[in-house]
Structures are given as structure tokens and as C-alpha cells.
Image (cartoon, rainbow, N blue to C red; front, side):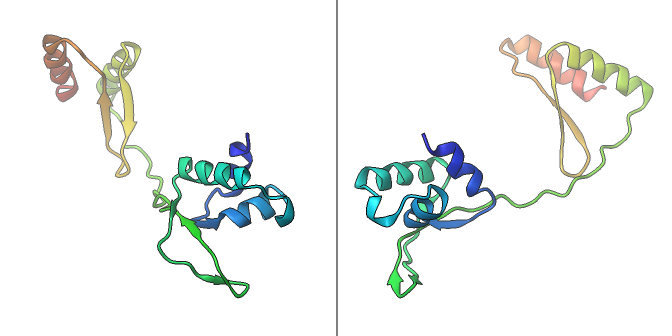
Length: 131
């Protein structure tokens, strides 16, 4: 029920506490915070990748249980390498036939397809390697 609100408010944050979420994000006064509210926020933090930190830092003179998560490293955008006309035609053919193009962080391209039949997989690998 609160997940969308909490997720939006914590975007880019690596640390928070249940008390901060309830008071600052959900605007629930400390006296009105019920145990079920705290448990619900704890579950939501878990779904958002937060885990309870073994450290309990001091905040406003009190030890606080904090939840932390590792944020993904920012990836530098790289312009994809230009394709030759032959490569471009072959790529369009593969994309029309269920392949997915992935541009890697170094600008190289790779193609992927879930192929169940081993003979089709062998042919698909041949196509990709010879594009």
C-alpha cells in the first residue's frame, strides 16, 4: 500500500530507518505509529533491497536501527559503434526474428535469444558469429 511512495522517496538513498520512513515519508506522527506499520515498512524496505545494518548509529542522542543497501554503480553512457550496411541488414533480420540486441558498456553489441532446440541454437550462434 505504501511501497510506491516509499520507493520514490528513497530513490538514490543508501540508508534509512523505519522511524524516518514513517515520520518523514509517510507523515505518521510517532505516537500514531503502530507495530503493524513498522512491520509493513520493514517488509517494504526488504523488497527495495535494504538490509538491517549491524551498526546502530546515534541520532538525536538515541541509538537507531538503520537499513542499508548498496546502490548500483553509475554506468557511463557510450555511443554504440557504427555498423556496416551488411551488418545493419543482418541485425534487422535477427531483430525481426525474436532476437534482443544488447549494447554493452564499452559500446560493443551482443545479441541474445532463448533457443530451446540445440540445432536452432547452433544455427543461431553461427549467424551471430558470422554477422
